[in-house]
Amino acid sequence: MTVRRTARNAAQILTLSEFSRRDVIETYAIDPDRVAVTPAAAPTHFRPVTNETHLSRIRVRYGIERDYILALGSIQPRKNLVRLINAYSSLWKKRQSLAMPQLVIAGKRGWLEGETMSAAEMSAGAHDIRFIGYVAEPDLPELFSGAMCFAYPSYFEGFGLPVLEAMQCGTPVLAGNRTSLPEVAGDAALLVDPFDETAIADALRSLIENPGRRDDLRVKGIERAKRFSWQQTARLTLQAYERAQSKR
Image 1 (tube, rainbow, N blue to C red):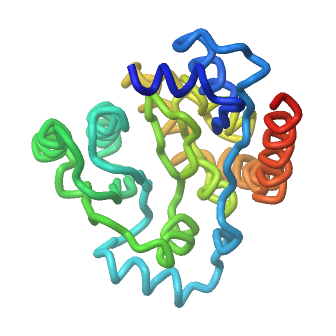
Image 2 (cartoon, helix red, strand yellow; image 1 turned 180 degrees about the vertical axis):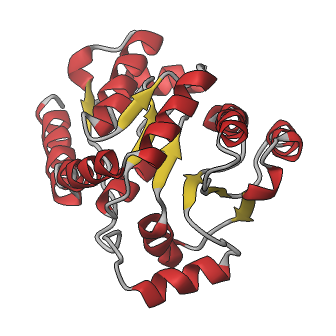
C-alpha cells in the first residue's frame, strides 16, 4: 500500500527499462507521462582483457581448470540456474567423448538456493560444475574475458546489468528472452526461452561448437554495450527532474 501511494503521488518515477516502465504503469495505474526510463550502463573498467598472464591468474584464483562457461548472479530461483545446470548436464552426457568446458557459477547464495545446489550435485557432469562464490568487482572483467561464453537464462529482470558487463568485456552472451533482457541485449546475444531446457542446451552447444558464432556475438556485444552510458543516464535523469519541476 505504501509503494502504491508513493508511486501515485510522485511527480516522476524513474526506472531502468521499458519493460519495468510498463510494469509500473499497469501495476499502479500511473499516467505514462510520469514514468521515465533511465537505463543503467556497465562501468568503464569492464573491457576485454587479453593478457594471458592475467587470465591464467584468475583461473588459478578460482580453481578453473580449462575453458569455461560463466554464470553470474545470486543463487536463487529467479536466476534459473537449475535449468541451466540441467541443460549443461544433458549436453555433457552427449559430449562425453569430446572436450566439454566447465560450468562456473559465481555469486553469493541467496534464498532457496538448495534446489540449485542439489541439481549440481546430481548432475552427470557434477565434477565439471564449480561454484566459486562471491567475486569481487575488480576480478570480474578478467573472469568475463576468459569465459567461452556468459550464460544468463534469468526469467525475470528489471534490467540485467551483467549482460552489459559481459558484452563490454567482449564475451558472447546467452540470455533469457523474457522481461527486460531482449531490450538490453538486442540482436547481440543468443536469446532463448528460459523455461526450455532443450533450447538452453542447444544454445550452449551452438556457442561451444561454433567459434564463428562466438566471434560474431563478441563483436556485436561490444558495439551494443556502447549504446549504454552513464552520460546518457544522467541526461535522461535531468530531463525527468525538469519535467517534474515544470509541473509544480
